[in-house]
Length: 554
Image 1: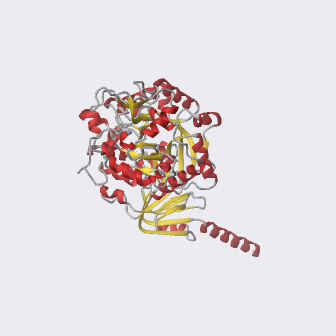
Image 2: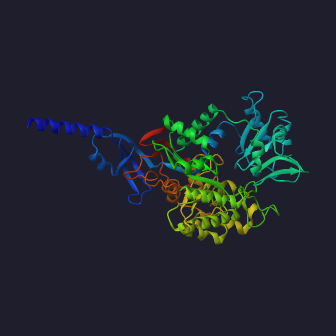
Image 3: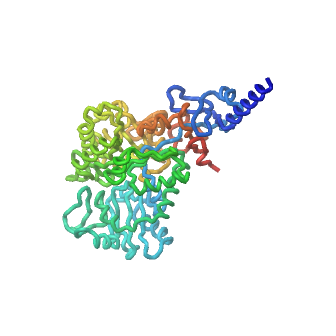
């Protein structure tokens, strides 16, 4: 009996030790994004960061009396937010270059560049991004001459806000011309791009594939710079409540850097990487199989392809002319046969396909190609995606659902583009643009993101835009094309459960349910209870991944 008593005592001590490794958070409410139990008061998880239970505070206190307790009284817990379309290294680079976002005219651009230049060595290029001619008087593209007076000798290269155009000064043009395979003058155009010219000479603006002519002479970032960029980007993400990102267009080298961060335990969030087109990263997936890091925070199982350009730079491929630029129907960034060949390659390797398509011609081309490549497999659970799905012809909406295609959309694109989008498209085509509810009504799953650094990395801005169809100043009253607004719960699902589903991750993240990872955010406010206009003012108290805080507000 004494031996049995000792055994029972050891068992009780062991059970207490196990319970001590369990953590329980209690809050005013826990929104789970799980239809089985949408709202709770408490959540428990184990030392491995796996959710054990979700329920009432009393229930979990009784079940885990010795657990470590996190008191979030008066606050709200939501699943970790997932950005379904971002560019992690692009964000890092943007944070290390001159920021031109929201510059109101070219004079403000010059002023910001001059301030940033003070930190540069004498011979360094001046790099920046975020300019948007649609925000300026006249709304016309800039030129090299606009930069030359301030920077006559230092090469300047500035990416447009959408990443689909670049602006060079004359020093940068001279460097590009010296290495270009043919003179930049004339009337020829590179495949998939356009050189803006005046009287046959480059003006300084390069669109889509033409940007590579200048990019070829911009000094490549060194290893230290790249590590700093990745560190800055991931910290910015978790600070804003993101626990996951679908990183669209990751090179072999960038994946290797992310692997090193994962090995060192330096990835504070999950990165679902998509290979950068038909390149080395896709070749690796085909030769060695889909990639998953043992730590669970880095994967590559998909590829990002491109069909067309962007609407703001008039590179989106349209079925008819731009309403504000007769004779121009945009650009196909990838030749259609090559695009379909890449899709077939990916399908043969078991790789998920996500294709950038913005214009109605671009979206039709991708849907047609998906139909041919998938064939009967279109009825299977393939989860191929169209990234942006920004301008869709009315007859194409039902095809998304019929082909099982996910619409990966970015709410803040609508509120950023609304001042000029109808100028580009006219009053009829605009009805098929940024059409979230119209797609949902057709039975299409929406995965929501931001396209950072094109837009802000802050998902609260995306929630606000999705629910209000208003800008940061709550304009226009009632929302732009308000019939396409999402409810707060629809928007939250788009950034949680539906985003996870779009990457085949629904068994791990996106909801707060037993067996899933304890990725969550603690907020001061309840996003499902406050007015939509206040969603961009939500206060992030802490961000948790695998049951551990990766960001805590001071």
